[in-house]
Length: 159
Image (cartoon, rainbow, N blue to C red):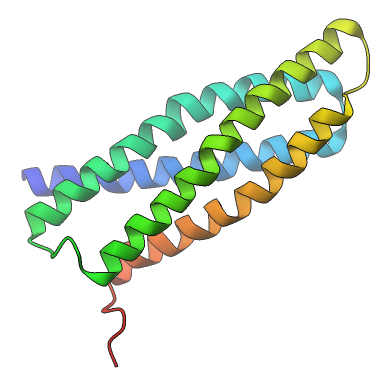
């Protein structure tokens, strides 16, 4: 296998892990949150935080590294409009993901405290979860567009 194909394979696999893990953990967390079972929420948040750091975070680093390598190896113009759009969308995704991770960590602590004290989840937990929910949509949408840009490589702004 050529170096280019290996890097391309790593890029595709990491994109799949980034998007799939992000979507899967978000859906699992949201469905668990909607059930309202404090013990299940605490357990799910423990796992979601770990998975986000290990899989989403790692693939989030691999993506730009392999992406820049592919741009260089394929001879693309690094400032081509479709690539600039990809960079911007990726930054938007990260700008949403970073606070989401912080919110998940805070919610995990709040849920664990509620379990330990045998009390319901505090209002702060619910405020954090609303923010978490709404921050997920721009990140999800941005990554969908990035996928399209990776596949289509359109000439943006062309007549």
